[in-house]
Length: 543
Ligand code: G16
Image (cartoon, rainbow, N blue to C red):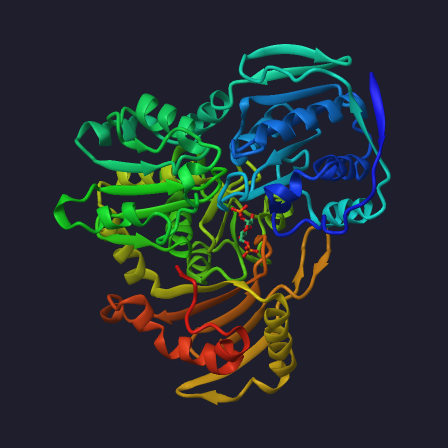
């Protein structure tokens, strides 16, 4: 039986960079999740009888919200739900399932790399039929609806057993519980030379993959150990836990420090280290003795993509988010293909991918992906690296240093100031905005400002315009500082300062990154008054 339940709006259901993210107790308030899900459905049209994909990263509260979402999908007229066994679907796997089964869209439950547990983070986002995150037009409509919603629809039914593969019916709607790994693993096998990678492991190549007790565990076990023949134990922390074992499932040098330390252990280190995040869309790549920044990784993957069967014909173009370093731009220039600079947020790549303008996309925030799905894809990046290593027969260090020798090196770092007072953070950005016009031509130390603006993106496909996407200060010689506020935090504000310096001279490619950027770091402080405005002496996280 379908119930129409009376509710009142919550004022805080504005989707951020990637869906709605809040603390679990916020989502546990009566009607909170229901209101948001109904607001999604109310913002969509013509889905009667269509298929909806539902899955999540297995974090605390995942199963409860999946039950609600299924019952609400049935009450709202969907014809079928595809749900991952155990409620599990990595974000890229969900994107693939939406595309493969021509679903109307999907609901993905995740707060990505944020911690999980009863007092930690949870999230809901909607993906459209191309498999990608809903564009701003839809997220704006969802927010508008959430502010006036007064009822939601749900069927009165007992909870479904999500742990048995097969089909059941809820109020006339079919629910198919699917293997979350099978379709995705088959897609990876189409894109990459599994034979060459298997041979590499056969030669004794040693790899460590840290699934961080998050969603990629089952995927990595199946693909890296079973299908590619890496020894058992290659994939670590492979059981998805609701609280990620108490860690942040964020594959960066802070939260994957153990892996980093192991990779820096000289000759004893494995040949290749990698990790992915809570929902499987981010990646960390470390070679023996060398961390590869996400921006460099994007450039190197783009430059070598044609070594993998799925990209053998070459790539059409590259897109990167604005704060991502310009390393990939130099690759696009050399290949003579298009290069696009978008705001932060994977949703901005969707149109470019759909229009065939780009094949590979990436972000400084550890995301890389291609036109195989419409999300960034952590394991995809790891497998493309493995494919390149297998074909080139060289190690990561050699590949990276040769890349720098060819294209120059973009020294790059991001300094995050987390949980800063929101008014202070907004004040800092407003003060920068007010200074923008006066900055070009000024000299700060040895650096001369050539341009300064608040980044605005004009989508070349649908002509939409997204303003206020980050303050850019550009210097002579290709150096740059970018300031923006994160759109994924759940408490206070996170100020991100992105610092980049281009160094064409190969004899100067072995500097320590923070040292190579020290004058720019000091300049960022003097332009933005970070210490005074935030009350912080140092960033909380440096990546
Ligand atoms: C999300 C988005 C990415 C974005 C990242 C960081 O990633 O999908 O496009 O780069 O957040 O965004 P912000 O700088 O606003 O915090 P994820 O992995 O959290 O879904």
